[in-house]
Image 1 (cartoon, rainbow over the protein chains, first blue to last red):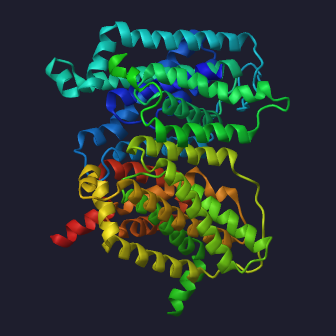
Image 2: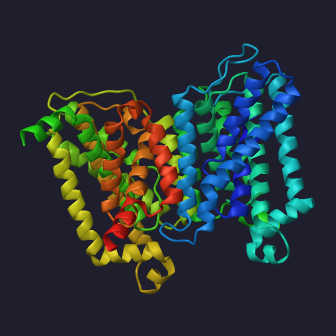
Image 3: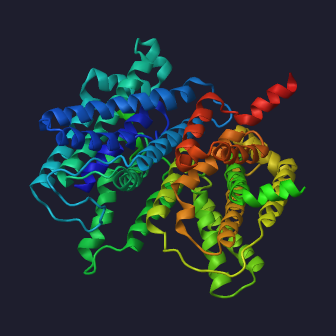
Length: 287
Length: 272
């Protein structure tokens, strides 16, 4: 379950990174909005499919709005005072603003179906029907995303912009529209991750869920390669396995120290020796 | 003088907060001036505070020695992180430090502990800030400081001139961690205890906001930014409860609309 959910978020990260050339740290906001909207609509008595579609559209739209407000000015402006750090600063600011707003206004809908409050435990291994659905849905969406990149005209446009934006423009590709579409698709994937968590757990805490999963998705991104959608999906499952395996192998369950060690390896040591990730050859442009 | 002294006593929380934020902003700026964005400087402040309060309250060290030990511990952490991350490119560097900072918030936060009888006087924060600012200013004028600035603008050009760019980044990260460690020690000594709530995501945002709002072009930027970020809640007390929103909104607004910060605006006005 965790591998699938982390993979959906990490896939979106790598898609945006591949097309725009920088990391959008505010990407998980779409996950938060997806999880929140689906519970809100269900809470108000709407059918589940309306709630799901509403959550995906809202998450995708939020991603595009954030991109236009926070990231586009940095792309449009010639590299200056901070170079590629401009987009990171503005996306970090957008994430911080969202976190501050959700925290200040206690932006959490009531839980549905009376399920327990969701907390992130490394030893969560119990499978019920909802979680099986989540596993299947995550796998289906991840494969659909990879097929979209490989076999559709839209995927071809993404890859063209990722490869050489000027050449793509010369060939008639609207690069800004392609970036906006890629951001919508990536954010919709994030929203699906959020709504799957919300539906399978019956609760969605804006920060208590989003921030830890963001760290894991970034670990998957670092492991797999910043611009490699295939690599990040694999990296996400590796991260999830690294978190869950100690709980399986150790009679006492997974420890915080083990998790910290795993993260330190992912974030500190791997970039030193594999600055482009383990799957850098499978970048977006060659997907 | 009496009125000023009274004002300082009444608004001690504001005055101390600006000093600490300015130190944290300087720690971020030092790394930024070498071309890298560190989003985990509060992790170093956390280490500095933890070591300081542990040595002062449990081992009963004199508070000056405890503070120096805390700052050196933070510098050691910065050095270790720098040994690993110095060769890494801009984006992975920022992502790695961002994730480390978030991770620290969730996994490395012990409960509030410690308690020392004598806290430091408010003036000590500004004496330290003055000293650190002077050292940073001297560094920016030094050969190594100029090489760092050159590396921030164009790494290949700096390397072609014979400078070891990775070593410059290692120095910058260690120095930034040392200054953050000093800020952490001062936070702990100011409160008289260690509270993990002082080293969260919001404080990290404020440190970066101080740099971006003030201006990244000069070490004066973090000082200006910290003063402005502290002055707004003082002028409009009704928004003091939503300070995290204000910090994030200003960070976003300045990074989009005025990336040079207030300093660039002041320079423009001065030239006219």
